[in-house]
Amino acid sequence: MAYTSRFANIDIPAVDVFSRIFDNLTEEELNRPAVTELNTDATITYGELRDRALSVAGALAQRGIGKGDVVALQIPNSVNFVTSLLGIARSGATVAPLGALLNRADLEKLLHLSEAKLYIGTQDMEELDQIWSGEIPPIAAMGLPAPTVSISPDDLFAIPFSSGTTGLPKGVMLSHSNIVSNIEQTAFMIRENGITEPTNFLCPLPFTHIYGMTTLLLSQLASGHHVFTLPKFDLNTFIEAHPKHQIEFTFIAPPMAVALAKHPAVKSEDFTASRVMLSGAAPLDNELARTVEAKLGVDMLQGYGMTETSPVTHVGLSGEAQPGSIGFAVPNTEFKLLELDSENEVPEGENGELVIRGPQVTHGYLNNEKATAETLIGDGWLRTGDVARVAEDGTVYIVDRAKEVIKYKGYQVAPAELEALLLTHPDINDAGVVGVDRDGLEIPRAFVVKRDGAELTADQVMDWVAERVTPYKKVRAVDFIEAIPKNPTGKILRRELREIPLAV
Image 1 (cartoon, helix red, strand yellow):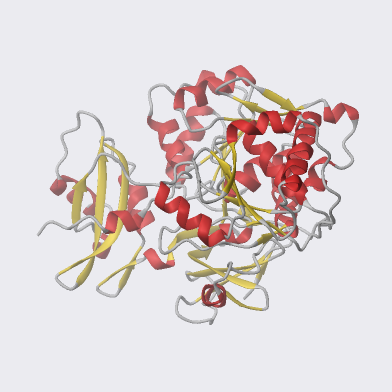
Image 2: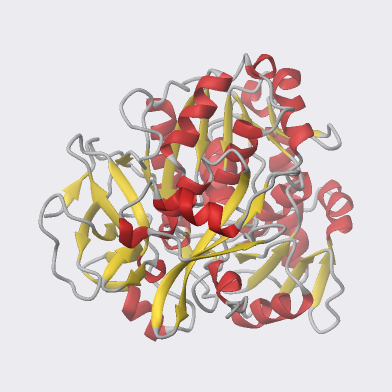
């Protein structure tokens, strides 16, 4: 069966992203702070941000950049990033956001895939027209007139790249309409969680990722909130920001939840202003979330989405959804659960691949008809590749990635379930689980980061897990490593773990 959102459909304005954020702002609203850099204390108001973005749009037009052109943007979270992003949007061009930590080879690969005509960033790109990130402030201060350009809601706003944790990166084509739809859907869910007035938001995850760009940045700007950010996550800065700036709403990823639960520097008195923390980008364990709630006195929520859905499709509600669930479908969104290897729906109550339909869903991948056909299966439905179940109360739980499910002797073993269990061990700081081949049999293999000073053996870990799981879910191999490889938003890079040779 197809499930619909419990919420009535909301109106989605037929406008471009820049217009959605800045049109109809009053003088009072234009004078409110929009973005503050925690590392520098630099702040920009909505009016200043609008004017600087207009000047950047004018500079792009002078360079011949306009509709149909792609501009690659590789700047860490900052006023410069926000100014550049909105300037690109106002010029009519399409942004290709690129992670700040990409190495040269990966950067060049994505620039080629995106077909970028201009690069704005921190690296020297001799083969491409470039604006250095340090040039953005003087360009923004020039007061150049923005070009006269008609931007349709159907025009491409962004080409972010899928994470590549299970395959090659693909450029996801997202229109202004896709992003504006998700801005409205996200804003609705935040209001449903009690945030109804302009509020201080801590947004530490990278804006170059779709979660950071739409959910943390654009949706909050469109709602008139004050966005506090920093170029890379630093726990001390993160903690200090909460009492200093009276942060009420904080976006996090699961690794941050681990730190909040376990790090001795995290103390409840620093979070007295906090009301809500929302985790996304990777599955959040319910017990871990409850630990953070009890420790800090906040409501912990989990949201769900993917690059191909702009990204948000589900969000939890305080008091109505376990934080380990992804909550409820956002307005204007439908979903269903299919068998992993077919388009048949699974019986009610069973696990199946989550399939989404809504105005936030991409129209496809850039220059990749094969991947588009595999993901978009007709009539607007998109296969997420995530295995989910619907609980009796209507909330949805992500079981695991379909392509990452371990098949041990025909049984399906979810890596995320074992990782969540391992994180409850007092001597384990982090863990990742993958399936590996041993003598022709796929087995669950755990990679473990030990607590400093802990005396822990592989056999002890395996025995500890075996006492707590169904026999076929037991961990069959354990390796101790210094850190679990993850992308900037906290997703475990299982592909890198699989490449580590298994000792005979």
